[in-house]
Image (cartoon, rainbow, N blue to C red; front, top):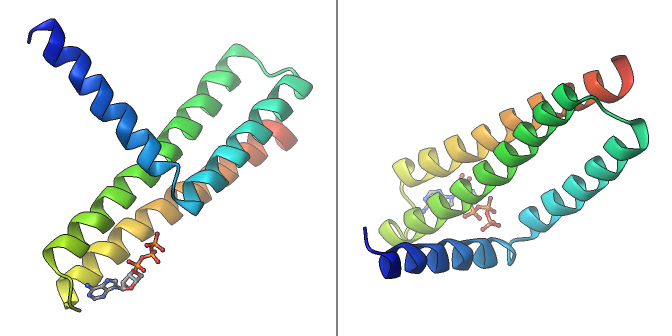
Amino acid sequence: MNARKFFRSFRYAFAGIKEAMREQNFIFHIVATVSVILAGFYKGLTITQWCILLLVIGGMLCLEMVNSALERVVDLASPSLHPLAKAAKDLAAGAVLLFALVSVIIGVLIFFVA
Ligand SMILES: Nc1ncnc2c1ncn2[C@@H]1O[C@H](COP(=O)(O)OP(=O)(O)OP(=O)(O)O)[C@@H](O)[C@H]1O
């Protein structure tokens, strides 16, 4: 891969992050992220706890973006209602919900149990 192509792919990736910023859900996750990071400094987390927290935060944000990407692909491929389109969107939304639930449990363990 040449340097120009390499930097172009960065530009596209940043455009993807900018696109995600237009989503209300993503903004909610950013606000939650900032709050959790501030709470982490206040509590004085250990390095291991920070690593777990950052993994969870990164995973949540990435999953939200993949969900948004999938929504767009489904809307493009199936503008009219279709059971497979519904299944695809519901599966992706379910994945986000599952990860969010696990994240909350991990947050409670780190901030209130540890
Ligand atoms: N083409 C479709 N065919 C069948 N069901 C669909 C279709 N598009 C959406 N749905 C159903 O409607 C639900 C909501 O879809 P929608 O695209 O509005 O997602 P959303 O979660 O509201 O995302 P956003 O508000 O970010 O666009 C889906 O989870 C799915 O059950």
